[in-house]
Length: 262
Image (tube, rainbow, N blue to C red):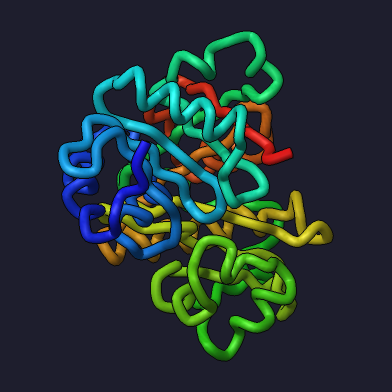
């Protein structure tokens, strides 16, 4: 298992961008827009690759190479050499070692969703609060400190608050003047953006999350970006919110593994 040099990321991205499912967080690492590490079976002509985002989301793709998967098993499950507190493994393409009974406690299920402008148009309105109580504002240099203080997300995926302002297309929601929620792109790659949305506890179940997502999706479509949604199937709130805005399942639910460092 070899760590791939940054100069070879682009060629690997050209292969990855035709993969399904495509995860913007993985694509952003290969595009060097966000930090992470890439391992391959061969540094010159890789057949199989493992990409690990600095936040821990990871995916492998390519043709199966037994020696590579054996080395990855040691890396993830025996030596646990990853730097992040936990690896969040998108197992849409399942290596044999994660299918063993010893990994059952690490396993959960996630669902991928997509949306079209037509479906979004039919679900745009709604929410418990009257529309006039809510206001959407673009996250910028004037309010970024408040967003970070309340939600702590500006460097969760992006390298800096400035990076977040320029690339996350973030929308904050004010309820009667108070910041209540935020929706932003955790990553962008291939014109696809990974949605993350947060609502402060005191504003939940009032339509703030739906309003935030609606404003964010509208902003994305105006910029020819395709929003994608991915969540645990047992997260009823996230599942219901995605459907309320007009997202539909892009594929069957898939296995997901959380591998703790200790």
